[in-house]
Image (tube, rainbow, N blue to C red; front, side, top):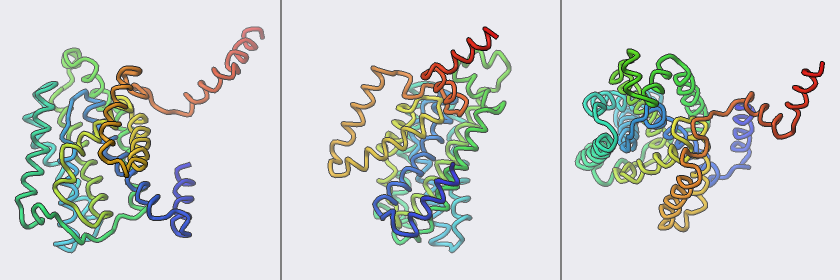
Length: 313
């Protein structure tokens, strides 16, 4: 199905059926999926409360732009260096701050995001407040599609691995997890580093699609946007993060002419979801074909019919 979707979109782009407006929003959806799923590792799987994700995105964006624009390296090297730089900073920030919990961690990560933005703002080598302009547009449909799919698959495999289960155990009950011998700080740092790495990839794709990047692009409101994706989709659900990233990006495109109302609508949406479904759209559930089949059988009654027949037989 993914290959079919990739082929159809590639055909639409080549033949001009998908114009620049739809292409822009399609690319934004992919970047937001990477950001939402990467923050979901930290906030959803491990139960931390980080609100400085835009800082890692900024490191990836500026790191890759410097590599391609100023140092002349190819785009893949730029992506790798940007992502690794974000991951290294994730480790450096994560080790001391992940001993904090709840509101204290949220404040620390918020401060980290602002520190990154202010540092970039005062470095003339990367353009200061004006930012970097004239970045080559290397982000193509092929790059963004395969990196988005790879990100989701890697995170999904991590969730179902022993290490992912350890992170989920920490989220469910930190004291019980520690009693079972799980190294809590180690797994928190791993989750934080993975989240930062993929946020760096998203930043690299963003920088090489929009030609220009500025410190204001990666401020608190960007971190808030990413947090909304995760909370709305359901903390701990990869499927929920993908669905909310797609839905809110499309909603944002419709509200382009009412930019001042966008955050009001976001806030109202969050309040409504928290009142009606506090666990988010998907809770901790994930999409699966087996689950879809069971839902279909339950709705149509075919499952009960099969069960009765078996029982009678």
